[in-house]
Image (tube, rainbow, N blue to C red; front, top):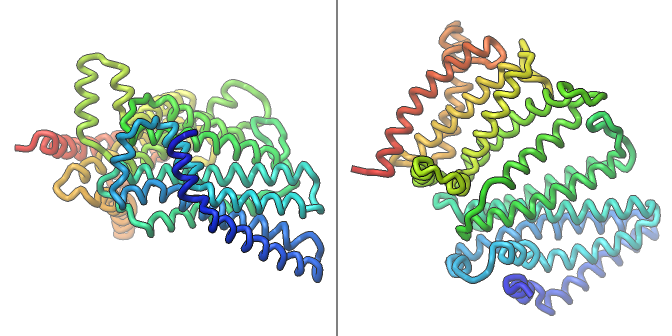
Length: 439
């Protein structure tokens, strides 16, 4: 058996805790059964069983998944685990499913009660609800563990208990909101094909949960310093793009009918991924230096292994920007979901390049500990406060120079943003050189 998984089982499944869990859940469902007898039969018990599953398995399990790493960091035992002989897959499996074993035990009891008492639902509906519950819990646990691994690899992020609890509660509430919005009836159109919405969402949730488990394994590889190439991240972004574009593709399978929304949404999603990775994953200045050295040596495999995820996302966004610009047409106003971007994609990409350079400039400065929040403040002033003030006092030309709108003269907006990039890029390079080769 996986040693880490076995260790977590010994820590979590204490016989006394298991007995207390069985007694508490038994008392809760007995009380709900008494309420069922006085009210509408067969409603209170299965409803409370699902609510208890969300509270215990989803929310508490997410807390335990994240704490399996954060507690090791606080107790200064994580470095010992990192140098152990366990592979990233063994470590990821042990943390993800071993640290949440107590929550899964309670969740299994809740789902068993739900299956037995939900006699007013069809067997197919019950099976789909159980699959959604399990898949949603795995996805939330995986996201919580990924967030904890991001914190572990970032020297400036706090590893406190409060942050993990808040993240677990937020993920649990988000899942509860998603689950409450799923109806048993209804249909949706995806790539012009009509699907049962409940069955489609179940399959989508299970597939996304599998991606979450793979994400935990890849992040564990990164934390244990096992070299990987970014194919999984690129494939995941492709998966998100194809899923999101399905609702924007109209009937018919024409090439242009499919390519335009796919490239438009792919451009936006890869840019969002660029911001997300740049703001959360630690920006090691030596990573860029290694990339330069590998590039001069034409070590392409090393380049792929050393490339940070924000740079991978930005390169993918650049490729999709070229496709979006070529496919057109260019909208004259703010494009809606799935509409072609045309030349608007070019200034959107340059906005991403400019903002990442600004983040690197702040990160490589003397006070880069709070680079993320400082950069967000700078961007708020640059993109919202300053243009609003200039617009109120009638300086429309200055307003355009500070924040050019991509859908209004996109080529002019691109030229203005290139000027922004030149100024910020020169400052970023100066601070980068001072950081890697201080006087």
